[in-house]
Length: 128
Image (cartoon, rainbow, N blue to C red; front, side, top):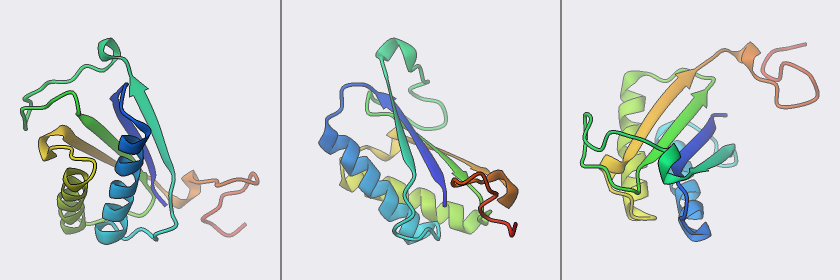
């Protein structure tokens, strides 16, 4: 049940955003052990002056298609699963909407079962 935040430059079409959503969801299901219907995504579109990034740090060059994918995931994944996911997400995004792998940055954070409430004022992943 990861929650995803996407940060990117403003100006992309609805079709572009939908392609990102679908491609990342496919990668999550394929390589990150996420059920297909488990979808929680938030898009943060920024003006150019509000989104600053190094176009060459540890990868690159990066273009204006740069996409930051931040994932909060409750269940920890091992290193091999994360590596498989990084390959899957860049392949899926390259296929649709056509984002170059150097333009995809992923940050994964893990937390604990007691850190999730999906509603109703309860700790959703622990017995009450």
